[in-house]
Amino acid sequence: MTESSTENLQYTGRIYQLGIYLRKFLRMFVYQSDWVLLPIGAVIAALVTFVVGSNMFVTQEGTTMGTFALTCVCVWNGFFNSIQVVCRERDIVKKEHRAGMHITSYILAHMIYQLLLCFLQTLITLLICAIAGVHFPKQGIITQWGIVDMGITILLVTYAADIMALMVSCIVKNTTIAMTVMPFLLIYQLIFSGSFFDLGAADMIKVTTISHWGTDSLCAIGRYNEQPMVTLWNTLVQFKDAEFQGEKPLLYILQGIEKNDMLDDFLKWSGENNINAAYASTSENVLRAWGAILLMIVIFTAVSVITLKFIDKDKR
Image (cartoon, rainbow, N blue to C red):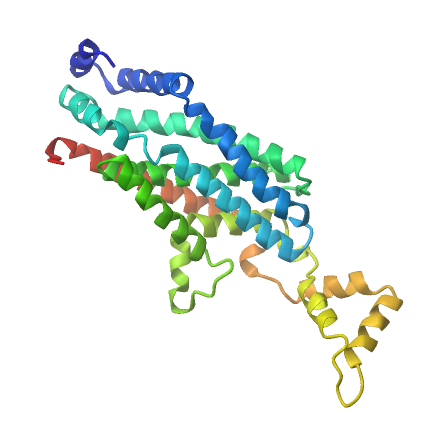
């Protein structure tokens, strides 16, 4: 913004300032190469989905691994979207706030802009998943279409991570600190999601992670509990030649299952005995996950606004 427009901020209302900053961010998208976040996000999504995507929503193991990986892609994209957007212009924000800028207008403009960016990333991610051969759930839980429910979850996860990074960008004083903090946030989301690591006494921490609720939602939408489990069969195959009292009992059992064309029944039976209540395909589970993510977005937004409200007292 020019010096004259900065001086006139004190005479404008919140809605008018919202439009000013939103147009500014859209210009930055075009002229300062913020659009590069879209192809970078596409590459990251492609690398992950082409590895784990073919088994997603096909087997329980493939669904668990695929949805967790997809959630991590969303978190990664969200963090990169906004981790530097405020701290890189902190001096400008301080000057404009003293000239009459409303912090709520500034943050809301960021949120609208970031929502548009996350929406585009969601469409790209779904397209990459389709190209990678992901078997999208046909029937949705909340809407009539599984891909729509899946898209809503991807958008919410990406946006929540985006607003979390925006909050960090409001708190830290420069881009160096922001980029230093980001890896720790990513590690926290990975480890404490509760998807692959036994957290023990710290199990309740998982409810504070975006990745936990994203994985729960995608597994429920993908009908995890209705899918076959292959881990038990693969484990038995590994021990098929193990001898017990001179016999190979597992080999005889496995051969009998295959000979009688009972493999699919065995895999289905395995899945029925590996049900996860959190992954049940119910509207309550999906809405609970969406609600938790939305609550996080509200908290991150409130902290962002409160933090920048005191920017005039910042001596850094």
